[in-house]
Image 1 (cartoon, rainbow, N blue to C red):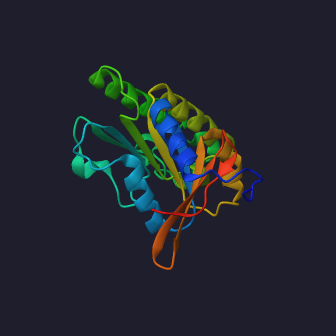
Image 2 (cartoon, one colour):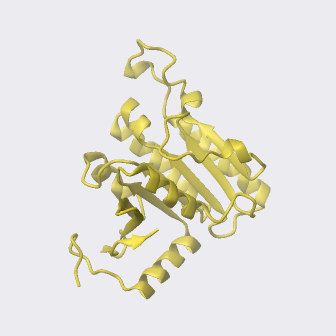
Image 3 (cartoon, rainbow, N blue to C red):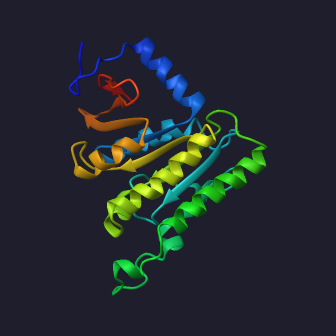
Amino acid sequence: MEDERGGVVPDRASFTRTLGTLKQEGSNILLVGAAAGTHETACHQLLGADERDSRYRLFVTAGDDRTTARDGDDVATDRVRTIDSREVLEIGTATDETETDRPSLGTLGIEIVETINDFDDSADGFSPSELRVCVDSLVPLLQTYDTETVFRLLHMTTARVDQANGMGHYHLPLDPDHDAVNLLEPMFDAVVTVRSRNGTDEQRWYLRETDTTTDWLEL
């Protein structure tokens, strides 16, 4: 059976094995779809069971402009950090700024990498999937910077998550066929489309390495 991209739809066993590999080797996942509430459900699953376990969690937000209500500030510990990109980049502090006046997006990338490095030192090396990163969301960055600049930030971030054998997910609450999704998709191991249908939150995974798409699965 083929999916709409031309690949084969994986059976549940092979899909489960692939997810296990993503957890062991590190992965970066792009979350798309316009249903904000469904993003929150998916976010909770990708971050892991709860904030009191042994995982290290990094939230990268844009202040109050985010897709989910989740934020590490209310559970801040030595294993949970939040980076507010608007504070790091001082976005919005100058109403007449031009693109050349804006702080380099590389500043945010360095902040993310250094925070992961701090976690790594504290953990004395990460176990597979011990690091979880949530970027919520990419939309404010795409509204402020050109796509190529955001692409470079994602390259820096995803590479460090892979190096740590961590799991990063990146909220992009746009339709799956949006130009921004198509441009950024190659950076990721999987693209997960989320939706709410008849009161049920659902997800559909596209696995890039095997070029396969799952059926719609309940979250």
